[in-house]
Structure formats: structure tokens, C-alpha cells
Length: 205
Image (cartoon, rainbow, N blue to C red):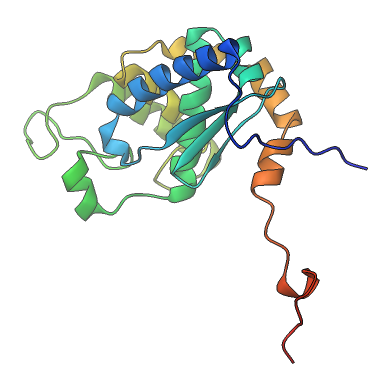
């Protein structure tokens, strides 16, 4: 029988969990404040579980276990959170141009050049990101839009937030552990039972 880890109704009061929550909140807030153009402000939640797991729900929440937080340096924690945000953006799809004007230039529209003031002056980080996207398109034939590899978007977000994007190159082992642990995500994303299978419910004829 498959063992299911239940999410606590509230975070445990252990000091270690509080410290993990403070770390995640600080790094997550730094990334979001440095990237207002992405148009999302998810809440970051730390779950008091010992294994390594991170996932998101829509564009509202990023869930990460205390076990994973404790295995991360500050640079690695930033990389893990930024990659999860990049996955969130990819699932949401491109922002409409109308709302993009209100939020600033999103990551999938062109920046301006020296003769244009529509999107402001060229951004060195963005130029590098564009070059990486073009290289990836040439290799994979993917259409315009967000890069297929969320690490490219994550690196840009970390740089714009003033954080070290080098952590992305050192989280491969941690991400492998995450791929092997998805019981919390599976439990939280499990669809509700159909009415016909709920005791006391009678299926409409």
C-alpha cells in the first residue's frame, strides 16, 4: 500500500522550520521584487517534511519542503525557487501585450534599441538571455516565446534581482532528488472523488 505523507494543517513550531520559512520568504521576495514584469506574486510555503520536494499550484503558491531548503546554499535556494517560477510562467503562457504595457516589458517581447524609447534602453542581461534563446531555437526549432529550458529564464530573473545565477549550475543533483519525490504534490493535486463514489451520494439518472 502506497504511503501518503499528509500535509500539516499548519507549519510545525520547530525552530528549524521557522528558519527555513524565513530563508525562503527572503529569497523568494527578492526574486519577485526584482522581476515585476513577470506579472505574478505567488506565496512561498515551507512544508515540514524531511525529503526534497518543490512544486507549485497555479500562479498562487510555491511549495517547498524543509528537507530541500536545508540541503541548499543561498545561491542554490535562489536557483530552485527561480526555476519553479520559470515553470509557472511557462504553464501560464505569454502575457497579453496590453497588460504587459502596465507591468513593464515581459520576458517574451523585444527590448528597445538605442533609437527607441518604447521599452527603454538595452538591458545587458536581457541581451544575453535573447542570445541564449536564439541559440536554443536554432537547435530545437521551438517557436518564439519562453525558452524550453526554464533554467534560462531563471538565470535572467536571478540576475535582475541582484542574486547569483551561478547556483543554477549546481542544483542538478537536488533537482534529481526532487524528481524522485512527488508525494506531497500528488496528494495536493489529486482530483476530488466523483459524486457517485462518495458515500451517501446517489448518481443522477
